[in-house]
Length: 155
Image 1 (cartoon, rainbow, N blue to C red):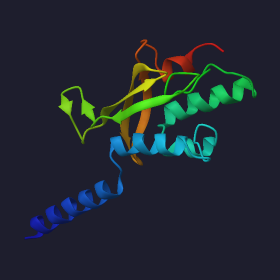
Image 2: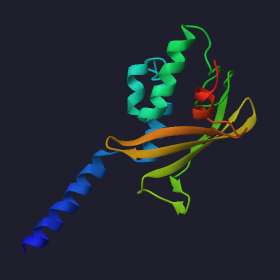
Image 3: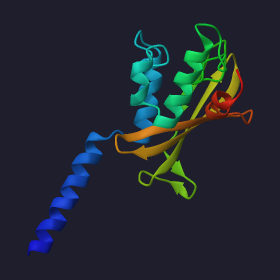
């Protein structure tokens, strides 16, 4: 009986924490939503911890600090991999792991499709599960680059 009670409490705890923890797709959607607002986390860097994992956040803040108000390693909008933006046909896919669709595990990918200036584009978000929920650990672009690679480069 005691075993069943412990098992039930474990399941309830997991269900409650997953209900409070937005999905990987929800996190990416929220980032795009707030990016269009006046509280853009890419400008208000204290908000980035809600979206980026510790390693990516550290690289992003290092670039901002070393750029000293000038253009840093990142010279465009990392959510679109572009400087000029005119977005249409925007969609966000369900999370996928290497083995297919996934909502659990420690890493997942969410793909964003859109047209920018009439050209089709794709951005792949790599998310890791942290103690705070899903966080973006990298953003990969169609040209083979990624946000992490760009931020790790020379200034």
